[in-house]
Length: 573
Figure 1 (cartoon, helix red, strand yellow):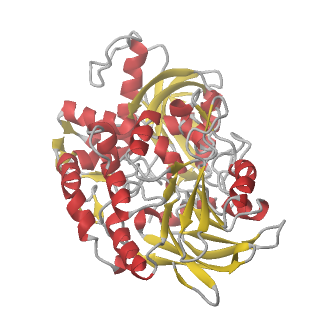
Figure 2 (cartoon, helix red, strand yellow):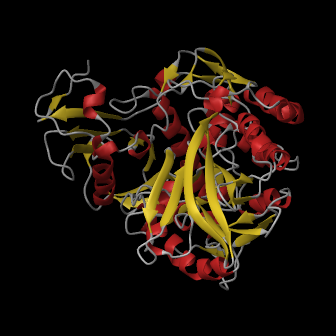
Figure 3 (cartoon, one colour):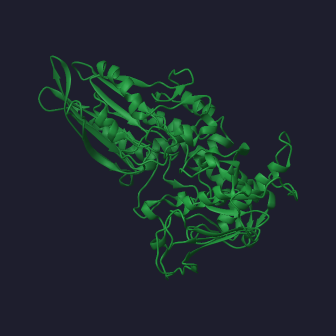
């Protein structure tokens, strides 16, 4: 905080969000320093340098975070699943940097409530989530905190409210159902903000909810996924919102509150620690208390500074453990396979994921419920239902090289903590599901040649919402006809070389995110559950390679799908 104009002061509040377990500027999947086309840098070690520089001129600057802290890299996985008893590097780093408070993000729940509680106990600052409630309606986390900043005259009281995303109830249903409930962001703020505003001179909300009104939840919840701007417009008493969740950059935006006519400041730094938001509030010390006169924000880029040597010294050993683990050799691969082409043609990397998912489900359906669960045991010859599997291309860059294969090679195929779920679908429901997936493609009038970018990502649909289905012991084949309207594109849908009838029944392996409603795919959230043992799919892939010792991409996939236009195969250039 620095002296401001006249008899006032300027309070500096710094903000991060969506750090996703990035401490160092390191890409664990590539085993080298992080780099991207924009040459951004990532990690708390870089954030620490910017914070230290800014606190030289604003020594009492507050630092808050808007959530999604502990999941997203092999480091997050390692300290949740491999060495969970060790101090979490994100907690160690955030304590050392001097965070004031942090909101709970939806990905905080990916490893379960006990792990989140263990992380919370390690923090020197409060973890806030006003709209995470126990089944009795009591707050499960501290809803808000008030910080007193000593100005040299009248103390300035800053209230910080944390709000998480109501989508947790969908995306991590298996972790939170029966334990926690998640009211809407705006709805909960209407309850908490008035009291917080009465006891504070300045109210800042850390909201793990994007600024716009987009949503992947469909009608699964009565609350919007992204609504930070609506929050600022609708709830009186808020002075600023640190926005999270959407992974976009908003250096500065002002929204006018409809009730008061006052401007509310919004800012969102880019994800993974690529940016630091810097908010400045000019306040006047009046007989009626501190009054906000002006607010502004900008973002600082972490690629402009080196890593903080204190953070690197503190966490080098923790980082090295993860590097050693992810580089551990677990097998070999006969020929390289990459996810790159998976969005427009059959792909052996996705075939591999579908093979492991389907094999695991088939074993589960053939074993007694209480039996030990081997993922590489001999496959029984009969199953109650034909087994299918569905997965998606999470990233275009994942590659398993020819030759030695490490944990990081396999983990790159599956960067999320989804678990395997088996559900029962009918033939008509399977077609509906694939029709939803086929909306990923842009309509075409000729078979081409087409560049892949001209075919995919219709309406900005991400690759992770394009799902590919495959058979297990019998092939599943289908065409996606881009000359046909969305909702009527899937043709020639066959299993075991026979047309699939609407009444046919299948056991389908999906991930927990889809089964909980993530992506708003039809039928799966309400389908009968045949298998749910909280098996992390990434772990299943790693264990499969380790047990098999080798990968032969040509051996995966008894299925196929293709893009066509009026029945003629699309040509890719």
